[in-house]
Image (cartoon, rainbow, N blue to C red; front, side, top):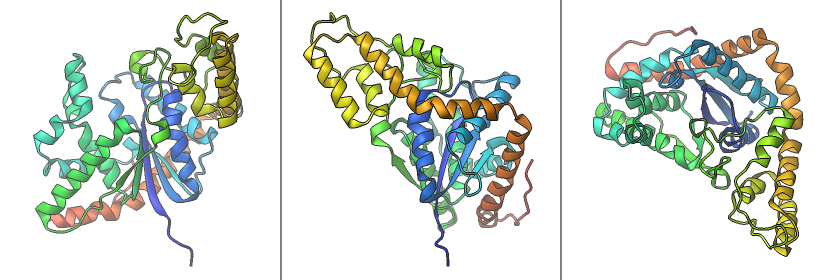
Length: 333
């Protein structure tokens, strides 16, 4: 009898270009779990509505993500890739969680506090973002949620909401998943040293053309130490990026040559470009080929939504029965 795999879930917002931070912090570690878990990957287009009001951008970003996951090695025969909005029962589940979630918990959300502090748009979706995120996580009886350190709060809040719901209705109805933190890729720096983010405009797009990739890498912020002087790779922005793409021997070799002097930051940037490009060259070619066939990408999303609903329906019906509603049958949008 085949052993039942544990279940892992990862979501990524459909809000513009996928960048190296998304790849290293979420996509790559999530894909590495395919051998040991049944993996659910969803495109968070409902979450994107908090900031994205352009329907064409939302659609194109969604299809970009589908092609990206496939190009990077997603096996859709074993795992699921689906669009959040194609599983409408997740918003129903979010309402049930909302009825057991206090305002105080939501006010602690980092995203909400950041929006207030930086005078960003704060709508109800911004405030209730953690509830929908919790529904995404809790509706599929997942065991783990791989996240970066800055996203750990979402899983912790989901666990709090599940615990509150279970306490109100007096039974372990909703399963509590565990966050799994990828310590080595917790925070991916952008071109200016801050966290790589579209909102900061400091990102390196994952599948940009090779010449543009080189141009961006060569623009990475470094100090003005003269070429002949020794330089410290460790602790530098360039070193942080080099470490996540190069193997240990390659990193140690560059570190040693910089420490001796006679090697400029420009040379080091060129070597960084080479190790990044080496890893992305083949997936980039696959991506552009896949992206041409939008009808196939849409069919894949519909199939993923159907399978997601089959997994989530028993969980949602447990919740409905607990609160006094009858079970019901769900179909994809």
